[in-house]
Picture 1 (cartoon, one colour):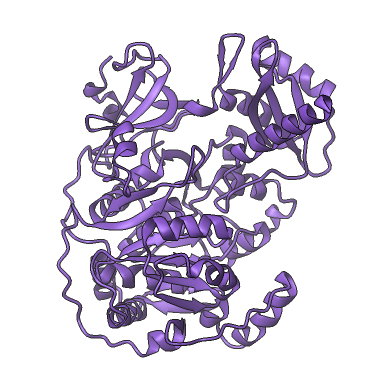
Picture 2: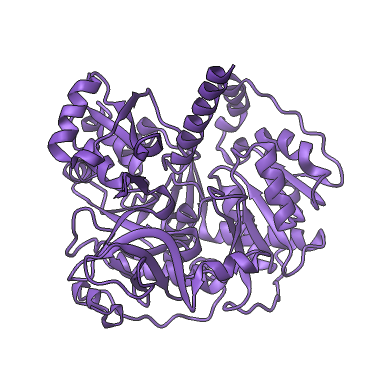
Length: 568
């Protein structure tokens, strides 16, 4: 069945349009619109302090004028290396107002990663946390940075938290940073305060001009800068609005615990909230107890997250002590959502939790299950309005048949412009105007799509194709298992074989023999893991995505070390 038929449209709720008319506006224009509609509505709530839309717009404008005073002009790159905090939102929208390109930078980056990103992007200015300032200083001379603007979490805390926070920070991290300010190293608050409210008249083309350089994880080499235009980001946010059609503009309260420096949190938490006039309740990091308390106290209605977040919450023994009934809808992304977790979370909250799918290159959402419509277990759902998805057969290079596994390809207005300064890599991931995702999957007879795994994560054992996700789904169904991830490891006989890493639920016990017996009941013999390793925790990104590649590297190092010893 040809993808051109768009059979998924028949599964759309009647409230969701098949196609949308998009205004040709820049992303920051929507902050101005919301400030006009909801001037006294709280735009942000941060650890006890509120900021209205009028205040957020004015501070973003002041920041923009200050960037102009530093010589920042259209097309210059401005890096933001912050945890979730109001300064991150102000810096982001302020940079866009002057026509700069935002470079979101993970505050956990080590010096090597930071240096690569700053050199590759050619960033002129960076806004960073005081805690990461020493790292920035160490690489600064090797980059094109002209100015460093330093802030701290305390800068936007209410009294007396702002006075106490530095002591708490030092106690928790053991770090006390003394920043020496000069003409090129500036303090955020006084820098902002000196800004004017003069109107900015920067001419931008939403379709062509880049708003964001979002760096990919670099799992197959150095991290690449994905060029996302104003239109890419605006379109994906508007698509999100139509998909969540039961939300009320100016009325919802969204929880922003997904990092803004990740494209998922940036779109479905920050941009989505601001475009709709919602109150965005910001948490700088994920802590299950803090999230539960915040949902209850702030009456959170929207909570986009990652599967590991929902896993941690449903397994928290105190979850039933909190009133979570305000939750309306949650969109899960960044990794597969286990069915057991979805069902438990919905039962505990009364809200809807559905799985979606996307990539940095698609701004990021390309497909999702209908929130208040037909959804399918294990499926990533159907393509969003104006978005086409097809499966490319590995054998023929043509569109695959229904049910046939192949590479997922995406076409739509949210698909990136390309990779920054990498035309050859850009050409490699496009087949005409179809973006090749690198994910393997299939489409069913109703147009619902399923991801079986990353193309590069597929395990080939004795000629059989094994998809880690299928094994992980089976492991998650075991009552004693909280988290699981599967990788391929070298095997002299089979070429590759399967190894599973397991984190057990608190108070549970399970041994290898019992687990193997369980797997043999639920998996074909060639898919059953040959090795099991029980751990206290698994390596994750700040979004909560399990870092499979870290485990693969650890196994390579173990193997190399063993071979070295045996050869001595």
